[in-house]
Length: 285
Ligand SMILES: NC(=O)c1ccc[n+]([C@@H]2O[C@H](COP(=O)([O-])OP(=O)(O)OC[C@H]3O[C@@H](n4cnc5c(N)ncnc54)[C@H](OP(=O)(O)O)[C@@H]3O)[C@@H](O)[C@H]2O)c1
Image (cartoon, rainbow, N blue to C red; front, top):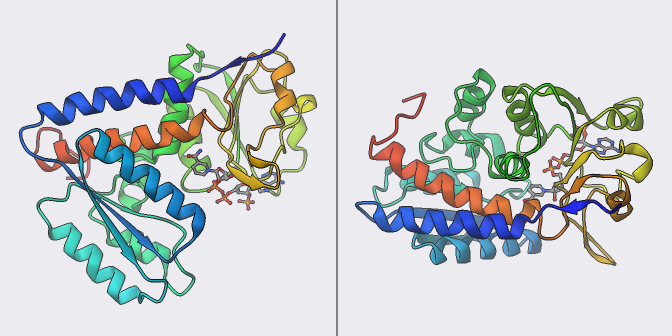
């Protein structure tokens, strides 16, 4: 029997409508600054989508574009300006940055309260400690989808393929905090299929088209495909579509995790405004 497709588009639309109501009820305007350095075409698409979604929910969006030749010092001084700007609640610096800029240095420069991407080491550390502040949007979206479809996580075998700071690691931590038994796989994992075959829940965040094939999936498992890969056949995920013949639940690409990432960014921007107005306490403040 074919897997039930997990509709990230519909869930994201609901979350965006919720955020719109919260923005309207907030006692002052809420501002998000996005910073794009250079002209990477994929990054431009992501920034355009984020900007559009931000405006649609009534958040004031500042769309800052800098040339690829921007120096690290120039970018640091822009981040410092945004940190000090009272009209800006959230700051998002689109990655990857051009090679001559030290990404870690830029990430560490963002005020942790305004770090809506959750990449700052303070926010990463808080997640590790189990007292999260801002958390990256993609793994938050993954958990939201699992909850929406009533997937039992407590005691479940969850296998996360990929260990990046923006998806794999935070997804694994969120699953661990929900009492799943978590295995993290990566490029040096000796037998990926042996690991994924034991999984009740697979989260694939690899960047390799179709790396998860039906033989690697236990019948009835839940499979979350985070991958967005541009190929000659168009946008494809990390999961072979034939997995739908084995999985119980599966996220489509597009229309699964992608729209959730943007919805969670909007939710994080509201959260940033609440941190800054002291309505909510940031755990590190
Ligand atoms: N849906 C969304 O909103 C969204 C958001 C972010 C990313 N993405 C997509 O998600 C995918 C992953 O993104 P990312 O930023 O996490 O990528 P990344 O930083 O390149 O990390 C990829 C991870 O996959 C692992 N890996 C690579 N080849 C492997 C293999 N053959 N077997 C097992 N593991 C392997 C790598 O292992 P090592 O650590 O050992 O190198 C690494 O940990 C990409 O397709 C990206 O476009 C989607």
